[in-house]
Length: 302
Image 1 (cartoon, rainbow, N blue to C red):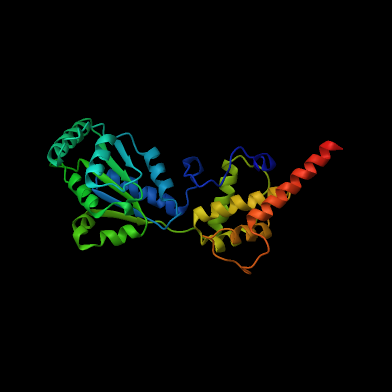
Image 2 (cartoon, rainbow, N blue to C red; image 1 turned 30 degrees about the vertical axis):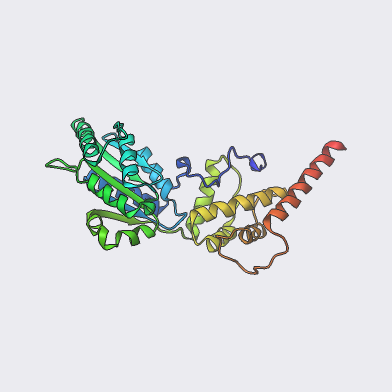
């Protein structure tokens, strides 16, 4: 694609959460600090919420990578599970073998034995659940019962919930008030401001191997901020499309025109200026890339 053109080793704006691109936005750093502090104090439930695309999964994976040695992590990325499926997922993460006939009582006994074993090794178990807003109400109650397991001095398992704002609404239901009362630490992720967008884009280009002058100047960063409202995922989408257009024109820097085309082509972006444009990004990109390929063919043919 445009890797060679910009002198980079990999695509800098993919949507896959990659901890090597962790920028350390103030909101993200604060969330990590809150999580580590809460875990060290032995709290039962910890909650991190944020809008779609604010970097929850990235922080989740960063936490998994940075957990201190005394912690044993169990990770559930897709929590749309029945109570039975959730219990089995937790057991599997903790290397507890369950049979098809294992009932709730036997599950509790086996899990407790495993948790006590880990505790005797001077370690703590933390269960990390991503996209927690997808947990069915019955499964949330099953999760609460799992966290009832404790010694006389501390909990045998801690739970970190990552979720969209809908998680807050679900936890406000009367039938989940017991679990809500157990959430002792909570953090809400914030969106980026204009300067943070500029630094974020620059950081990702640098991690990808770029070494030249800014590809996205200050004017482009301000436009990125307006169109994305500071949401990292939307910034990534717009930057990737803008880089494609700049490459198609043989340019080393992205300009406002490239970004405006990218914005029009991205449904999640906030419309900027005139909504009516002659071509969609896909059509413009095809034309430009074709023209670039044709010029290259001419050079080698002459």
